[in-house]
Image (tube, rainbow, N blue to C red; front, side):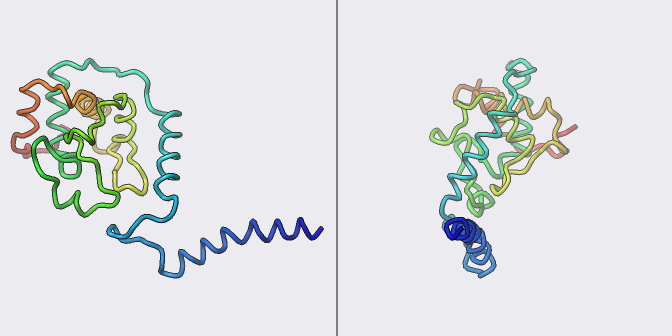
Length: 176
């Protein structure tokens, strides 16, 4: 009986201590603060498990020049402020975020090894606790697929698509 009581108290003590820690004001919540213990591991594992379950396995549109050009326009207008452009420094917005968003046109941070369906899922639904918004209400599935194909092939884009990425942003809503 003592063992069971001790086990119950021990199990209840951990979440209680964590709750009190969060209420104490000592938890790192600023973007410049170091991560909490296990924060990155737990968030990454949860994300990867969800992606294994829900990320589409097939791409419903062709990866042709038209799709890549359309993806470049959407990316430039809606994604580049956080994820950067080729041969450009990171923006002030991305430098102030935590976790820092990957600069998707930098060789060491590209997602070209991710299946397009993984990128599509992340862009459509966003990633909690990361600053990555979900675009399901503002971009069509076709636009999200176009961006996903663009990023999947970011290391081998045609010159016309590279030019479209560095062109001035369009003045209208990219969802039109």
